[in-house]
Image (cartoon, rainbow, N blue to C red):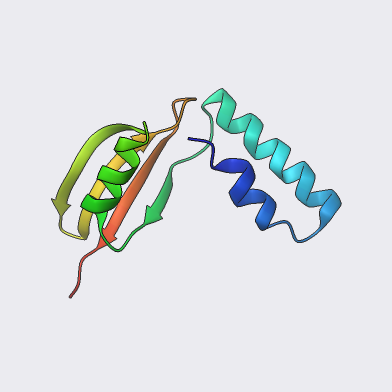
Length: 89
C-alpha cells in the first residue's frame, strides 16, 4: 500500500519546505521509525475487508473496543496503523 506520497503531496503548503517534509517522512517510514498513526472510518469492518482484498497486511481483525471498532494494519516497512470506527454515543 503506497499512501505516503499521495497524502503528503496533496498537503504541501510551501513547495520547497513541503518537498523536504515529504522526503523526511518517507525516509522515516522506510526505516520503520514513523510513530503510530490512526485512520478513522465510518465502517471499520467494511474498510477492513476492502483493504484486505487489496493486499494490506493486518495485524488484528476488527474488534470492539470501549471507544469503537478497531483493526490494526502495517505498511511494508513495519509501521503499524490503527483503523478506527468511533463509537456512537
